[in-house]
Length: 296
Image 1 (cartoon, rainbow, N blue to C red):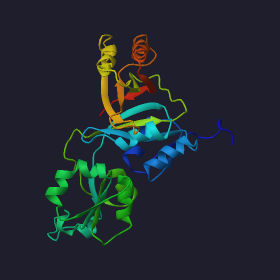
Image 2 (image 1 turned 135 degrees about the vertical axis):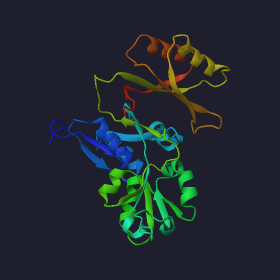
Image 3 (image 1 turned 120 degrees about the horizontal axis):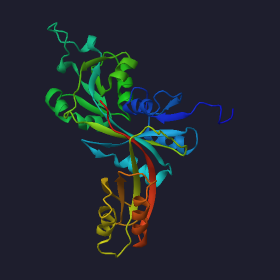
Image 4 (image 1 turned 60 degrees about the vertical axis):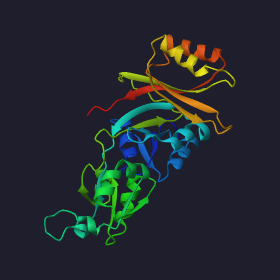
């Protein structure tokens, strides 16, 4: 089958995960095949090998900050341009089998004492720390590679007093009940997802466009970071994020991830990048892409 006749493919974490929901948003109204993987490394590798056209990667959360592992994969393990981003409200729910966890009072509610173990992704666990500490301090905590995988695990172990934290979509997919909705500690729990891949992705209707770059400062250049920021500041180019990560080559050496609220197809931004390179900085363009803020 030729590449022109096959359906485009998108790699994501399991069905019912937030990554799955993000993939469906990116390609709403379009015919694509979703390819699910349990591990984020396999999501990356799928697209890097050319088995899929794009991957959907959670990269940042308002509560926990950047997902460092995923950022490092983008830099050190694969060379996949960022094609789009979407910011999505990550609403976590306590999921289980109500028939086995129901309170003896007959009220129809779940009984915390009957839950022996809670399973989820470690980031989701962190987002629900206060809920878990106050309502389920006795329960054992166990992690999985995604919230959907956690819910699948609970569905396969009936009668053991297990529950999971994850989405309503995954609960319905695996035939479980939502015991309690919105168990996250903060209402402003948003996750930023990236669509990455070598295949172009365009949406002319996108209002906002961003550019992400990776800057490595020259050694023995006092004030280099200040000059980098100045190149953007005097042009009034807004930076939405700047974050340092170790280069893994030498102690004290860092990359700087910079997100810029401007398309590369302008006059100002290429001039700013040229000025940064002129002082000896290395600049790697990670992508210039449409950005979709949450519209709820």
